[in-house]
Length: 301
Length: 301
Image 1 (cartoon, rainbow over the protein chains, first blue to last red):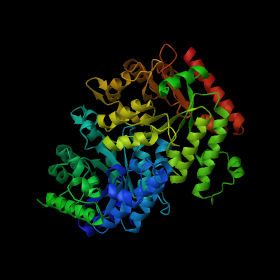
Image 2 (image 1 turned 180 degrees about the vertical axis):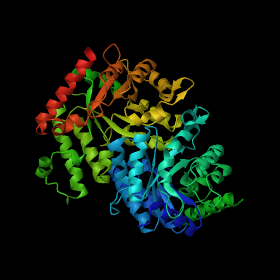
Image 3 (image 1 turned 60 degrees about the vertical axis):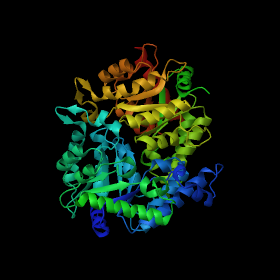
Image 4 (image 1 turned 180 degrees about the horizontal axis):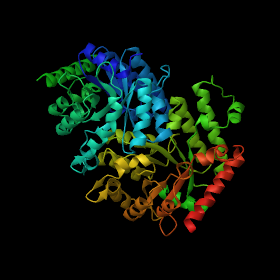
């Protein structure tokens, strides 16, 4: 079986874009007309609401499946509906797979030892038939090496991917991630902890699925991290709603034009919130095409 | 409605112990005879396995409900079974509540802005009827202030609790948490970020539900953090299986004998793995009574 990173790089080359679409289905961002059409009212049950977020995702998936290599569901928006939401997440992952999209599940988990292994096995199981089996997940490194290592071990063993939150795009991250220790930032120390697992898991594509989340809002950090982890794949949020800069996006990529995936969620999922008259399959598709062109432009100039 | 921290302190005083029981139901730790009796075989479906972990929890809850103030389900062991596992978690939370136990859900979530709010609303909802409504959750601070603040805001608004992982008990944590910045450890800087929210949310008990996870394995850290956050409640794992020291446990408490909850999971849930001949309601109860006596001993000498 081809491992995650090689499938991802292959899909990026085939579809000619590193853009991926975040699936953050929030009922309060969806068009009122769409919710009405689905029969969602303030009295709708949690099961009905969870089914609505799945139906919304289907509209998004159908609009963008042939355009992008992967989708990134954000787990919080599904967990909000308890088990009904997790059913919606499982169905979303299956629907993405049916459309040949890779699934990077944004769960930002972080725990230690056997608990970390349980999380890894939850989302990156060895049996591909488990419905909620993602291809890669995000994790948070605050608990140190005995948090990171079990995740790396499971991912490498089963050919999956891990994106460690190294330097995130939010302004409040600096109070932790930019603390200076002997002239180096904490995020550089975190990157050190990834390097060995990344070096041991380079695929035929020349890249490793042991990667990092690197915000586009900090170009200097991206430049440093790209040098420090030259073969790791970077997940770059902060485009669109989070206002990532062009310079930062570019810095996450190598001269070969590869090395990153650029994620956008709200600007694709909810065009009516970003200047479009309506949100439907066509306007979602147009928003994705616009993002792809924008990122292409950034990476080639 | 009485807020979480006041209910917790009240329950600690009523039951005369700060010990809580972790609910980490792992099939491979359960007695083979018990699994056989439940009809669990290697061919059992994921739904059957998830139901078995719930049934195991019921045995544990019935054994310990009158002894301890709270339980701490570890989410990873439920997520392992996808939506079926979350149903088991929801039912476990309801069963704990029915037995007048507070529920500290160990999810170690961490994300930013609206996503952080979505996580907080998932597990600490304003509507008490949502089945997976916990009383408090654990979170991870690597994403900084715009991760912490939305959680604090929701928790304070709805009278819930938050335990920020400040200094965890695992050996690999030091590479992050003990980095020194201007003669202070990173975990002290994290504690700074909690202090203001903790000070603003002190209940009638004199304590705040904006608390910290502090491992018993590092007494010096516990002493510092107890001084830095005198009114915050500390969640102290590292007892039993994780081998926390007596000195570290003691340091997490104030001279009034309050300020911490001490969690033990495996040593209570699986007595047959810790020298007992069998695991059943009686031996689980005996293990809990032994832990309570041990912690009482530590705190009074």
